[in-house]
Amino acid sequence: MNQTNDTITKEMFIDCRPEILFSFFTDPEKMVRWMGRHILLEPKIGGKYRIDVNGSDIAMGEYKEIIPNEKIVMTWGWEKSKVVPPGTSTLEFRLTPKDKGTVLLLTHYDLPVEEIASHTQGWMHYTARLQTLAEGGDPGVDPWSVTAMH
Image (cartoon, rainbow, N blue to C red):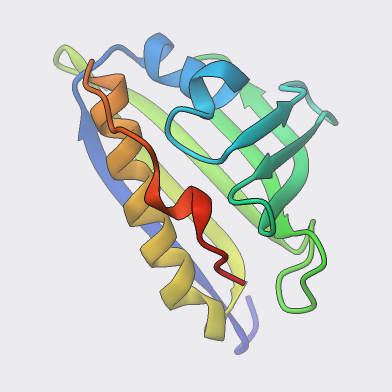
């Protein structure tokens, strides 16, 4: 890590089994309920993903490591972005069983310092929606799905 990049880390307990939580990262029909308007996923090493967040902000990248029900590592970036283009940062989700639920550890590496605040806000927003959904609730329509961010 150099002086212009930084890392976001977020850890939370989600009251569902790891295999259920894992499916919300690998099944586009489940993912779109907590993040984005349209999702394309190829959840395999070297597979691509594309998350259309709101019609103008589109996250893209490639899967680098997948351990079913335990870990997903993928590159991350924004289509047409000069600050965080696809492939310039790395996103890792670790799922650890605890009691009857799962500890989710999200780590987003190699983000430009000026992007830390907005990405932290984004991950707070989306992990809250994920938690509600994975625990059997309905997060409702995502208000961010109609608002451009970048």
